[in-house]
Length: 239
Length: 316
Image 1: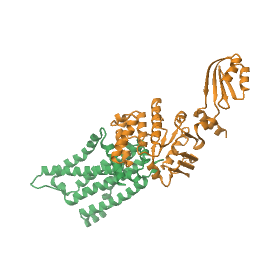
Image 2: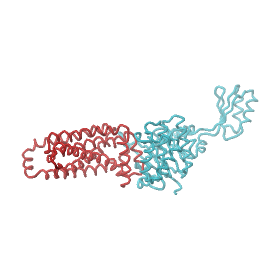
Image 3: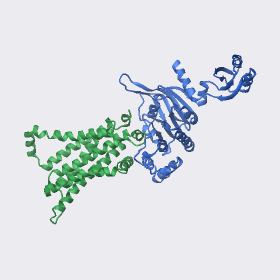
Image 4: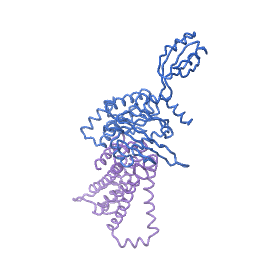
């Protein structure tokens, strides 16, 4: 199974990064997150290392990259009529799916780490006081965990969207809306449940809150991935 | 090895449609002997592509069953796909990758050892005259070259059976001929069973040792191309000339070897019951004062066979 997943990873890596124009496209995709990882730390100063915004930057970075790559990988493969031939090979359904998810998730998390690394370099250069500045442990671990779990969630959602539309472009558009809407709805929560939230936040500290968020994401990820595995089956992919 | 590469037993597949289910494959019962090039003929929409998908286990039959290389396509589809090569309706070529990378990926997928991968890729690409352009992006190739590359991919892991869905569809005449030549050479060299769908009768006639004809998902006929030709009528002779009088035609019709005579603008088509000498018929015509300019012997093409079978089915 692992060999099969790695075969798909090999192909995906070549398709995404080893073709004409793809490196430039990738660099352009990295530009915004890297900019966020540079400008905000300069504005915030060393406070940046112990506050929540690095979590947001890491999450946005991984989600954006995954949202761009997954539709191309799955809906694009259908659109270019290469999926059926792939399904006619001996590769198991799960190996194909996992190989196709592994590359975007790895790239997404890698880019999130890069954005945080960029902010560390910027902060150390601009605020050098004889010792290396680093994120507080909850922020460092939280960034890694959040970017990974959100990348996985976006990838799982990307599978569903990609299997329901005709083109990669359509899939990318729908996935973008799907990513934008939940944070907007979440902003309504403090307005609707202000008292309850205030009560709740008095009982938990920052790291505890982060753990709760991560636990919810783990549950969502498992559910979405199981559903994606169930959906990504030959008999259901060939109509 | 199983004597039959493919066995279909009442194979049936329905698709959901708005009003009522559409039956794409209707009770196919068919056997494909190992080591043959088997032609699966039918017009567009006859059910050829669906049959290939059923054989590969990409679709499940609504009723009936199929065995490929001794494996049940429903319960052992992974085993079937491991041992078969396929060129489907679309070439399935990754156009952004080079030809070599296209084959490299599928060689990895089929777990060919590294040293064998490189040798096999070179053998196939060189055999098809594509080796020099192995590092070009496949998207820059002509349709004929892509089709050849897809054929190479289907044969990469030396499968005992390859399923080819209209391998020359959409190609110009020289490209189609080149793909046909490669296919025949590779099948002979590698000793594989080839199950080939086509609506090109001349292609089937040239390549296949056995053919099956389907229409509306149903099997219309199966056999050696010559056997099917016999169903569409015996040999015939075309005679071009002048002065074919009614008396001359009556004399020809009276000959025991002649089945029928049709005259049209100085051209006679004489259907024979069986292969026989033409000289006595020509002597007879010349004796009545006719002048003969050209004589052509002929036999029914698979196209004639197909049209005859379709007509028989409609009449029935």
